[in-house]
Length: 205
Image (cartoon, rainbow, N blue to C red):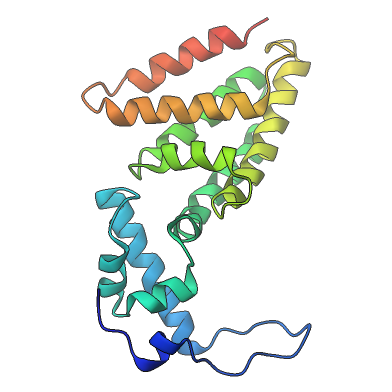
């Protein structure tokens, strides 16, 4: 554990703003926040989501106490790191709502989820866990994803291409399971596509 300053050990900070006032992050705190996110993103990509948070803090040039003041637990840090990827997937879902083949659009979006999950070892497992714990920080990422996926799924169901009893919750869990299987079978890069094609067959009426 890296040495923490007296302020980090005591948690001392500038006086809190009055009731109802927005909390403004100081310039040094913004810099620390940005460095922590950058180092966490690199660490998760290189070593997976179980990467050492002490190493993340050290590489960012701060103490572990500073990291935990910005991100109270690992899921909070993961959520912040993955917000960019989630934003891309949400934007992509809106584009696919206009695709001429609703079922193909849905499967394409699921395929892109698998691709994004493959960038960070452990992400698929974490997302599956977050789906069971709606109070976790990572669940904040999964909520908008469920809404985006539900819109694509409904369109595919209304076209008659997907069974009406399919739920977006089950579908996203299955997609994360496919991502996890692909992660654990790195010597078979075509596995995810094969499993997604099997999923497509199961979606049809």
